[in-house]
Image (cartoon, rainbow, N blue to C red):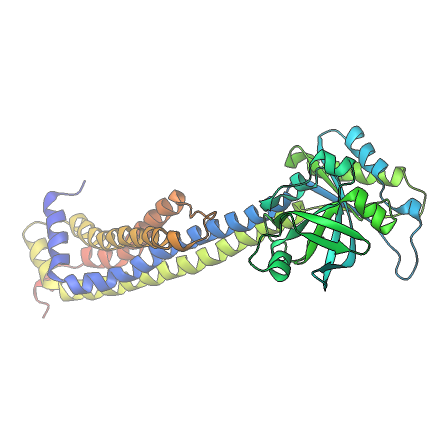
Length: 399
């Protein structure tokens, strides 16, 4: 147990050298703040990256036929609407199945031609690909069944062709067909052109696409599973159904985003550990600074130590006094560092995107406080032990 006198002496010693104590403490402040900020930034980054991938569809399986370079692919090798129906009816856990067929085309608006990517989609495509309708409405069942000549266009194409005016209800011509624009849309998460949705995409019902191209098959098949856990077994089942329904020699690429999701988490974890090592190094450097300053302090206060020993202070009390001083420096520094580390994310939160929230890493707060206090105690032990080992007679003669 610490005696009250020992506590008061330690506090008075630090108050007598406020500037030195603060400068020594500053390294601990930086180290503690770094630990909190590193974990905060890491968790925020991981949350954002994983959220982006999951928004694209962490429970989505995609499949497409393999086309031989320079050779025409037999129609029997393509993915048909019957394949989609078989997958939905035979594989457990399937929530939705949709397909898309893509082609390059040109649309004509007010006599001006615009190159576009034409996407013919089946029912359920919006739910799987998370298309956000900015203006207008999505296809209804009648549009699909009655082959209504309606289309959706991207925001980029809308601005390019119609400027600031609403394109809903306007007509565009595609070859011999005239379509009515019923909506402007965007992807919920921008795939940067890596999916079938491009900047200048026109989406039409699949039956119309089949009529326009004369091709009654899908380029890409999407299968939505009920849970993420069913994605891996579902991927194998989809591949089995497709290969079983097509002639020998046909090949399909069947995949999902789980691999990318796991890789993103792994990279985030590795980055967190790397930055934490840097923060711990900063704390170690601050601990060495505490030890150096305390060694200098012990030397400067040799006579004071001798006087305390002469009037009855024991070695253990001297040891506790200097350990307390180093622990106070590191403890107060840790508290200030944690407060700084927590205040910075709070200050920048208003400037972040609306869907991005900065988590409060309470584990990092506890870790920063614990590691910082242990650092002060560990590195303060050598000076404290040196002070406790001084002989009273020699200390009183020290000049």
